[in-house]
Length: 142
Figure 1 (cartoon, rainbow, N blue to C red):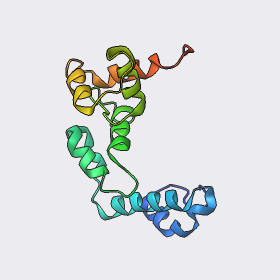
Figure 2: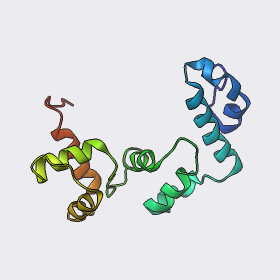
Figure 3: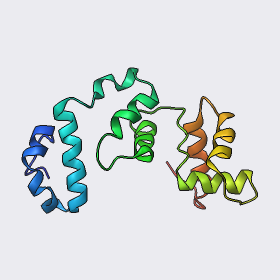
Figure 4: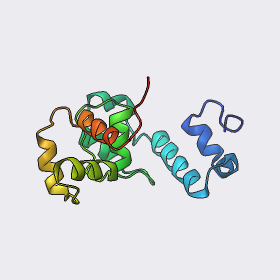
């Protein structure tokens, strides 16, 4: 990838988009990366404004990009923008852990997850992380 887009700027990615698949990406992923670069190049993505934007506004920008859905945008909010209060309702791990720990192992509807998560605000990202960790039998050593 560095050979065809050394600085990974949107312009370099767009010039090299036909060669992205040759970097080990599937054709579909190459298309997604090129669409993301196009959004940046056209100015429809405002990354510099994200720190001051609310979560839903950032999600609305990101899901314009082909290949980025709500779940991906929520993961971006949690892990890149370090937003503390994201509740990714469509996350299978969160659903599984919530069902296991709060609903006797039963599947949980989005509405019940939303109600449960309301009590975790303003730290729903943190609660989500702990629920994910509860599913892993091996402790993490840092």
